[in-house]
Image (cartoon, rainbow, N blue to C red; front, side, top):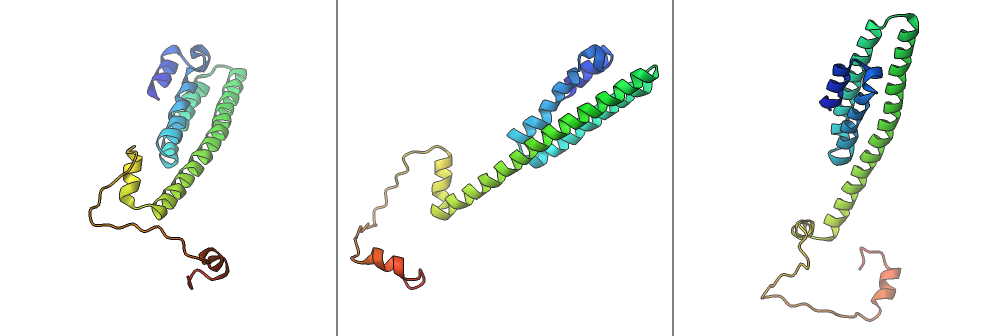
Length: 155
């Protein structure tokens, strides 16, 4: 995040650096996709703070009313566009995290946690040898009809 801002300062501002500081926006975006939505908020506020500080300094140092107005509009456009884009990314990442949590809960509801851990490690097939176990497969006559008609508590 720091490198594009450093180049921005070294080259003398937005116009002379070609807006290189905009590349720093990848930091909060990357945090939203590869870390967590909550953590990306911190990076986004840091990004906005540094942008606002640098552009405010350029406004302060600007000569002439036209240059000040151009710098103010540039600041508003950067903050506005980046805010809208980041909001969409943040909401998407937060929803993705929620869905991941739901899928984890469903998986843990179906399988034992030890098996889930083995699946996540990539262990396939999962086969255990247990010496004192008998497995019985049975077809109960009339069970399908009974299960459709009876309340689960009565089964």
